[in-house]
Every structure is written in structure tokens, then in C-alpha cells.
Length: 236
Image (tube, rainbow, N blue to C red; front, top):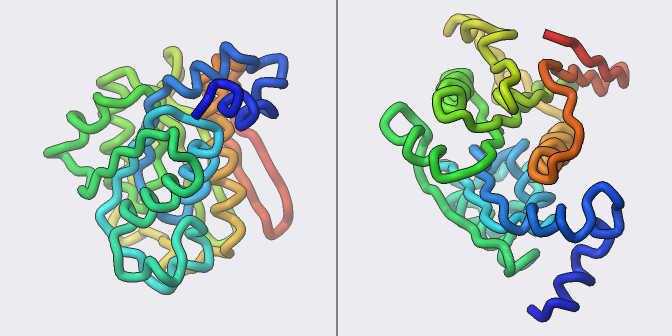
């Protein structure tokens, strides 16, 4: 793609005074890992690819299922039954061929987390289980990687930045994961389809702010209640 085409593509970002050409270059040089290509990962992947993030890694081991389609908007009926990372890769290639997509067809666990996470600048956690969330958090602390965190359930969500520029991490607000007998999840309690779009878009926005060195409100978690339409920020 010609330089003038690149400028035209990202012009609405470049025109923002706080971003400009310098910030767009940072975006295009960034290496971001998105863990999970599901409800949260879908809007994160979509907006980071659209923004021109240079290297976008996506880790997921699940296949697309029909019940995913109410909220996982990068997938479609034609991708049901294929790996989510493959579906995500096809989506990104059609949206922005400039993005270098790294497909990680693995479950993030104790055997591979450190090796995978070490390859990227920023980690975005869109996983759907506490074991993975805490493992990713701990590896990010060890490797000094900023972590963008989000979670969703029903009408509610949470968003935060952890371990960025010396800020606190997940264990500073939730020291231990809940017990196995008290684990709410979307499979049993559901999630309204638009909620992951809201939360995932916020996560993508925070990721781009980290990349472009924009001001960040650290050591805070944002609680989102879309049923009562309340947004609350809590310091920790």
C-alpha cells in the first residue's frame, strides 16, 4: 500500500492532535496479544486491526459454535465448526491486510504462557475462566508486561489496566480466584450480545492509549451495569 493510501486509511486517527503521525507509527509498530477470540476478543481484534496495530497475536483453541454468534461478531455462520483463530485471521485479512496476524492455536497454560506472552508488548485478556486470568496476570507481572483486563456476565462488565508503568495488578484487587463451587459463567447465566461489544471496545481503546502514551487512569477498575446503565470507577 502506498504511503498516501496508508495516510488516508488512518487519517481520522492521525488528525487527533494527541495521536498524529507519531502516534500512528507507534500503533503500526506495536505487538499486541489478544487472549481469546470470543465475546471480548472479537471487538478487541476488530478495532485493533482497524486501527492498524502492526502485529496482532490471537490465542484460542476453541471452534466457532452457533451459540457464539449472538456476540462474537468477527465470526459468522460460514465459520461455524472451524477454529476461532482461523476465523479471526480470515476476518483481519479482509479488514486490513497490513496487519501481521499471528495465529496461536493453543490453550494458554503453565507450559506455554511465558514463552507466548514474552513475544508481545501488550497483553489483552479476553479469556473466560479464572485460571487463565490469574495465570496471565502473574506472567505479565513477572515479565513486566501491561495487561488490559475485561470480564462480562449477563448485563455487567469490568475493565481495568494492570501492571502498567508500575501500577497494581489483578491480585491487588482480587487476591485469589473464587472457589470452584462459586464460578459464574456465561454458559450458565448468559450474556446480552451487545455487552461484549461495549466492554471489548473499551479494552481496545485502553490498549491504543497505552500504545500511544496517552494519559491513563491506573489502579482503577471500571464497573459497568448496562441494565441500570451505570458506570462506576473504583480505586484500589
